[in-house]
Image 1 (tube, rainbow, N blue to C red):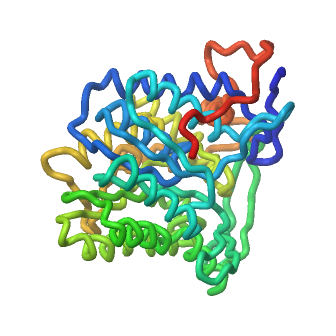
Image 2 (image 1 turned 60 degrees about the horizontal axis):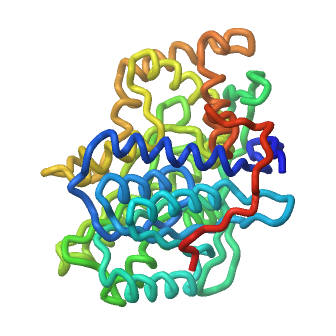
Length: 395
């Protein structure tokens, strides 16, 4: 079939298998070009199909020759209807991994559930024995609690009064003012339940109880801090409370891992175009300005560059450097004083008319469509493609 992008707001309703395949190949080629990392050998990635999770799986496999298990929740294809992009990403990752002689299997299901945890534990026991790294990279807006069955939904709200600032429609380039009503305690509780550290802790508990964690085991979850421009709606909002909980959970997990001499980290990553970030008001405008500044300074990184640097220069370096709160900071280039000062200056001047010059809205737009396999260099989108792609190692 001929597949074209169909968008609704910050979501693309279609995905292109060949574009997703090329994205995966490009990331693999980047990792292999940087040389071998003395890193993990048996890895579980929870939330493995897109963004930082996919980059973590690629970096583990092709940077350290690791066996990987990926857990995700993606929509398979049906005749005449393409799969979600993470399905194609996972299929083509596994294809490339198997070609390279690497073990790679996947589980498609609700990672919050006890059933998927048990299925994953059973697979690790059967195939890998013990694992030495778990990456936790879930970005779901909804969680059904595995014990109560109650459904919780996260919200993106400020907490210090009504938040008013500019944002941009990245499809049209129109800059406009937006106001968001503040959240309440219920909003905080729901968002922490979905995006906090409880499920990360549940995963490590299940794996530790099953005795499938190797000595010296590490686990990493991903977080974000951001600038003063976005903090009211992000770090000082409902989602920020969830990130605080996630970061506190790292210390709780580390305490439980003492017998293994294990360690839990939170890695604070830079702002990038993801399906999740595209939904956050103000963030698209901030990212379009940030991209412009960081590209001009030669500092720009995508997901794969960030995670390759995390593994090679932080997580598996002789010493893992952390900040005063115990977090690994690979947002260090984004948060440089000169970068933030320039973004803040441009922010004041950004309008519908000036943004094409001041920012990198084209780069934002391209990265957004790349997430779904569109606007990828070298792909002929007029060509008929087979949407019925299977994931080779799907359990």
